[in-house]
Image (tube, rainbow, N blue to C red):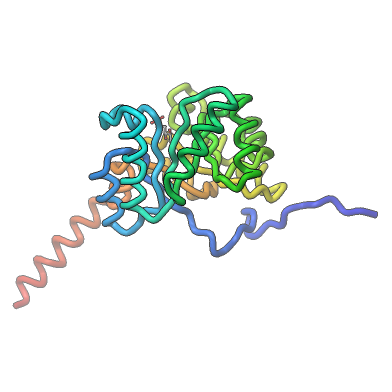
Length: 238
Ligand code: E4P
């Protein structure tokens, strides 16, 4: 009699690779912010999108490509670079050119029909991908089936629309663990520190965050009060 394949549980959570710690990406195309996160020593990669590039005034193919290389020269982690085309042939051409720029580049592809075809094509060729604009578990399942390296559920934009984005992260975690999909959950559209903490609780592989949310993790008034007291006591004891 064949036994059903059931993922094993440890203390109520699915067991995963113990060597696989949560990673922090920064969600910006701003070089100063990327440097600041890198200097903090906790940066594992960078995500960009066309809106973030436009925000920095980076226009034109040559400048955009140079900017991706500049980002790769700051961090040693993965750098997501998004295609603009929405047809299969266009995405393949753009994605291959982006991947050729630097070994750290991950080609970011939208969750549309031709995007899934392109992700499968890139996966077969060993080009790493990040499937973006994911808002449902079904989309995440399809991205994993196509062989995406990362899937990017946009939790903040779901929250903005009265749907709990964290529920989606947990649902994708369960589905991927059920079948040992290797696609990594890259929680995106993060707005604040509690998004990061909750992502860690539900087991997102990566959180891509604004610098303010990463730095926000430092904050607690009792830390400031405690440090001030320690320093005052040290000074009074001289
Ligand atoms: C990153 O990969 C996404 O493009 C980004 O997190 C979207 O964030 P936003 O919803 O704040 O624009």
